[in-house]
Image 1 (cartoon, one colour):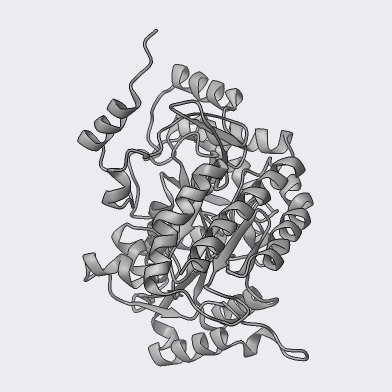
Image 2 (tube, rainbow, N blue to C red):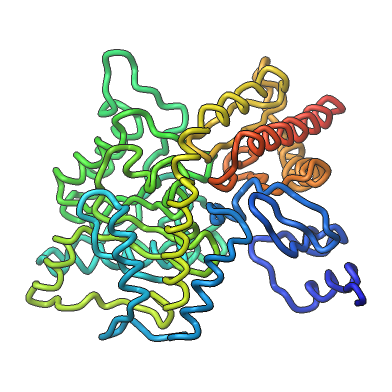
Length: 460
């Protein structure tokens, strides 16, 4: 059998495939990765070379690659009922998936609204917050608050919530009535103090006073913020958010598109931080990436209040593919597989090893500025010299993200994400089934990448 020509495969990609978030020079490169298949924590390119998947695809493949049981469940559902919408009717696959997810969410977040992606999940939560308040006789509640540098998606509403200015600039004006408050990088609760005195919380309170609490519909935040590098909040932070929202009648939305389904060592990050939000958004690992599925979990009383309101009766939102039978069948099979493999417990049990291994790299590499994260979600932040405090120049930072780190990753056999959103970072989120040996391999590969960064900076 004749093997496909790698050069022709890449030429075909350049002719017809329009990539997502990819620089032109990377797409035009003869070294463009073409991933052919996967197994467990590894993927293989079209030449057969193996790479450790250090980002679970894109925070998705929590149960690992090549699960034939999830494929079989999807095929079985396709043979029985390939499609039916959730408009005025239901089908068993979506019913079962909703029930299984409701068992995992905290508190009374028992109403599951399905869509297809994280951006759509955030868009749905945004629209629910506005319509909910309108149904309760408060149509003036239109303002949404999110955090600086937070990424909440790319559809126009979700993009407005996103706090990364250069993501929004090409599409301005985006949705109005969105405000942002500081994230938690560097914040620590002092001895004898409380989270109520954190600068971010103080600024949030003053922002609410400036806008007027009666105008605010919801506050959106990730349990651990991805953009700016795995920002773990100080103890008590989420309790303060809950208290503020309760005080002013604001909905609290936990964006768990990344943090949900075990990434932080709990089924949902909200559980890890001991809070019950009003809405949870999810996607990515809901099916471990085996089929597109997203959604939001909403507290039951809020849905009932909207339905029973004089001008309610329906949530005026939906999509053709939301709750697709094949995708929801994959979600059920994924949850079964995660329970069978103890994937969430594995991440929780091996978290100390992962953290200790990454922390140990600080002593060996003067260019590592910080190691942050929890569960199976970490960021390595780089600088020119940690000891002197010398920062990277703009040119150095660009060369690291666009050339030095991708080359070093390829040589080490690692696929993950160099990130330049607010700092120069390497993001790590391996599949939740990664055991001690795979974590050791991953840490060794990160060591090699950091060594390449050291050498690059030393030569300049």
